[in-house]
Image (cartoon, rainbow, N blue to C red):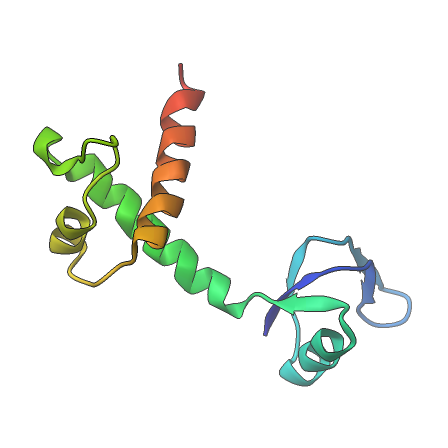
Length: 109
């Protein structure tokens, strides 16, 4: 299970320990991950991979949108994105991807 640590973790075998700093993600056996989550030492990050894939798909769709697919607020239409990627998304999903898109496009300027 993929978790994000809230404390520094020491992982590995004796003599070959590695340290995982707070805020970093790591894959652990489910039993170990669940114990850390229960104690408040880590957060379940397994859903993060799915979110990243959806954001990537939305980013690709935004590149393909025509100017009329954007609303008065400047954001792309949820419906227009759904038509391209072929699945339902929320306005929150769109907003997350739109923020990332704006960051990516403004970095080069």
